[in-house]
Amino acid sequence: MQPKDKTKNHQKCGVVYKISCSDCDETYIGETGRTLSYRMRQHASQREPTTAVGEHIGRENHKIKDEEVKVLARESNTWQRKIREAVEIRTHKPEMNKDNGYDLPAIYNNILQQHPQGVGGAHAEGLTSPPLKKASDGQKLRKSYNIQSQQR
Image (tube, rainbow, N blue to C red; front, side):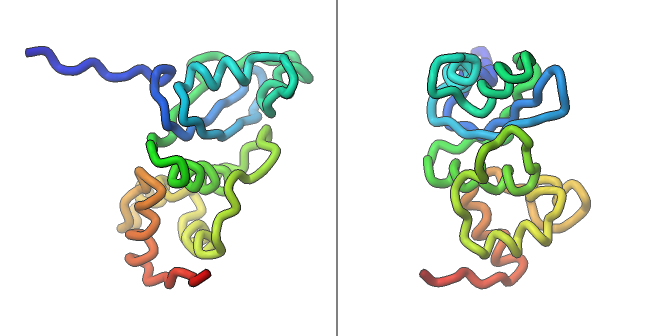
């Protein structure tokens, strides 16, 4: 019996990812339900409409290397993935992003203020809450800090 081979990042689908430019300090955070390699081909394409990463590559004549692409989270549920992307954008404030992603409810402001290094980084700093592996873990985090959810 052989262990299952680990899926390479570029073959993963349903991910929130971070791209760091190889030639400068600018970053981009995005999400895709497709494979990461497919999304990276879209970013590299100079056909209209170009992505924010594509615009950066064309305008600055910079390159993005495979090792500069990092998977931040995997999430098969589209809405949970979009929420996670928005949390990561608000936390890291990437320069290449044109927008903040999904418009998060105000409750997330409280959570992110209590975790200025990011939700995953807070645990590493010794706080008792575990890192968010999925956007749905935000419910557990709200309960641990006794934050009430807003009714719509």
